[in-house]
Structures are given as C-alpha cells and as structure tokens.
Length: 363
Image 1: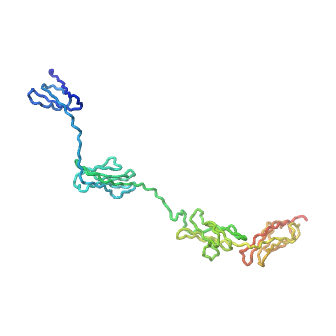
Image 2: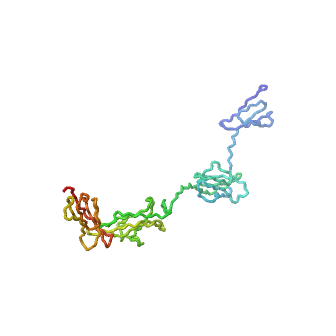
Image 3: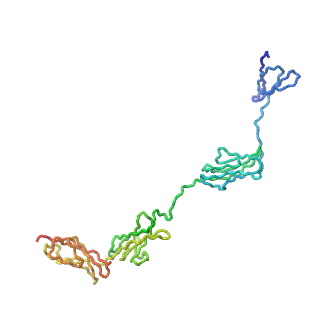
C-alpha cells in the first residue's frame, strides 16, 4: 500500500449474486480476527495494514408477522338502530367488543364507503347518501392480537320519492255557496208517440263528479226511475209524459246536493191534428173580397183554445176562425194553427199544415 494511499479488496463467492459480506482484519496471523465495522459490501477500500479475510452470507428475509386471534367477537350496531334510513339523515356506526373492556384496541373496518377508514370504535355518517348503503363489519387489534371479524350489518339509504298531493274527493273545484243546476229541454211538447230530451248540468262545466237526480211535479221528492224515463246518459233523460220537471246534481259521500233547477213544463201533443180551411176555398183572391180562415180539429167533443201562426202582416185572433173583410195584400201569407185543450192546458195538438193565401191588388 503506498504511503498515504489505500488498497481495494474484492470478496467473491461463486454462483451467489445477492449476498451480504463480512470483513475481518488481523494485525498478525496469530492475532484475533476483528470485524471491520460498518462494512457489508463486496468491495472494501482500506488504508490500514493487516491480514484480511471475508465471507458471504444470505441476506435476512422480510419479516412475517404472526398475529393471534383472541376469542372476543365484535358486534356492529347502529344508533339509531334503523337499518333503513333516508338520504340526509344521520346515523352512528359503532363497533363493540364484549369482554374487551379496558383493553387498548385499534379498530379496523370493512365498509361500503370509507375512503379513510377510522381506527376508532365508531364513526358518524352525517347527511347519508345512497353510496353509504351496504354492509359494515369490524374487528379489533391490540399489538399482535386480533379479534374475529364481526357479522355484517347492512345499512340501506333510501331516496325518498317526490310526494304527491291528492284531493279526496278528487275535484279541484268546490263550492262555498250551493250551485244551482240548469235544466234544458229540446222541446216543451211531447209529439204523438215520441219523447222530449231533458239535459241537466252544473256550472262551471269543468266541475266533475256530478250525478243527476230528476223530479216531476213541484211537490214530489221522489226521484224518477227507469220506469218514469229513459236515462240516456248521466245528465240526460227522455220523457214521454207531460208534467213539470226539475233536476239537481249531487256528489260525494255524504252526498252534497246543488239547488234545484228551474222547472220546465212539458206538455203533450194530442193525436188530433187540425186542418186549416178557407171559405170560399180559393187560395187566391182579389183586393176587397171577403174570405174566412178556419181551424178545424176533428174527433171527440173536446173544447179547444186555438193558436195561429202566420207571416202575414195582420195577425189572426186566437179563435177557431176569423173573417177577413175587404182583403188587402197585407193579408197575404201562410196560415197554420194548433189547439190547446181547455181542460188540460198542457196538452196540445200538433201544428196543422200551412195554407197559403194570396191577395192580388188588381181588380
């Protein structure tokens, strides 16, 4: 070794690559070997004189930790104890080890959503979300001792559905004052062998749920049945009897009734049909002539009141006939009539066919 220099020594063990090395130095061949402190590499650089030896050894393995399981089995509990909660609620998850009181445990968790699992025996879920749903279990650790894993407790976080407001009954329009039913008739006289259609309604028309009740005659409180009328639909019937009809609506339970409608008088048409005749029977006459227009109702001995309808400028009186003296063009027109029984003013005949009278101004 040169003065002030150093020597490089290399230890070589055939066929072994990954070794650690021990170096020893003796001051003489017979002196005790002493380890060169802090040196474990294959190459040694030294500036000290002496006898040097080396040896190789396999490196120590990574340590394997052996844990012992203690018989205490934890229990996972929820506070409150509901396993189903709604999003936004708060719940505390707790790990309890029976018989392990007083021991310094560190806790491990298997949880549905724990980015950083706590090491304490409980943790709080504030404002739960759907991702917090799932199974939770825990165990305790103390030095090299572990408890068993607890049984899994399952927490379900429900997303509340949007509430729906309903009305019972389901009507969106109700009344503070009683509404009045409205009655409409397509005709006020029942034709021979026919019927009249009556329609009942409640305003506003958008209100719903109404059932309609029908009555005949002012003092009657008994609603009509299928023996009295033909019920075409809710709110519409057909009747073939004369009388004073009214209706009202009702809905709900108990039934809420409207006020009665106005009454409608339905008359009946007699089978006798009148005929309009002219005396003399000329349909065309001249100015200044005289003619009689007559309404004749054949059959029976009934006494009648008469009604005329004409488009002439001079109206006919309500008699069975009237005499036109010294006719003029103002008497020209169509004439028809009908009769009303004196004994029953609600029973009338049909209108007669029209007769046309023409008065010429020329002589």
